[in-house]
Image 1 (spheres, one colour):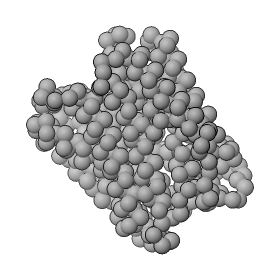
Image 2 (cartoon, one colour):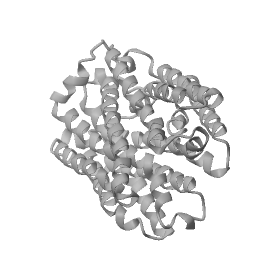
Image 3 (cartoon, helix red, strand yellow):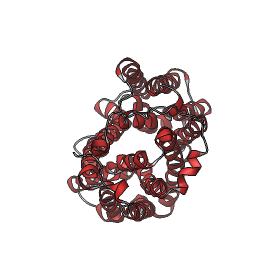
Length: 385
């Protein structure tokens, strides 16, 4: 949660940056896109070198979180335009590739298969809260954008301290010595279980980060925006952050109780339905709109830990870290596309119909996870709860 606070730190203050730097909305979107591209680059390098499987994971996580925080500090202290902001955001994404997938491996190392869905649900919930934390910081007080970034960077640095001081690999970490095998990132797609888990994840990612990036703009464009009793940033934190965290817990519990596939399919159907209904709810009152966003915020992230759980259980135990890093690299590459396409659709139809573009993601993801359900070895816990 702490290490990932820098992810959307700049996105939370885009209105202030547009005013100070005189940039367009088309330019501002790259402040998020650069992080996604940096994450992909970092994850691909990490995969090629098998870093999560060759280095002590808690030290890799700590160093990566500290460097991501440092990039955010530099941006807050000395940057006055896009020329230096984009490279720093790209580097932030590179270093975050050593936080998120490595954290998943560490969490999985502390849980047997019967409880792994819940464990990774907690972890993905922490990702959700951490990613939306800058919205809370910005919404609670009208702070200068540099102060918001400094606060997010300080939180990220604290995450690095926690990781190096108290986090250690658990007993379920593979005891086999890892060897360099970057080819496993490709070879895993020849195996049915990892292939379907990855395809389900890709559909999920097509929707997730585009929603997280553009939901503030969507809410501000609704007729009910002026009638919210709190700032839009607080609404985003409550519906995407808090509701998302609860959704992760529910999704993890469902994955352990009913199986990986049914839990993921249920979440994908609900979030896909929210995509379909978004034009209708666009004109609703603030209470209905907030409730709708809370349901969507919970459903859109509830299945994220399920995909990681399924992949960690089907991939070669020697290369689980590599498999998870490759999965996230490809998934985040897709987010760059969907994030960029949403404003293009807005230019044609307005914000009311913007999220219809996301429908194919949960639909295709649900089909993949339903197919994965045919294999009881990957959908049902093997250990007694």
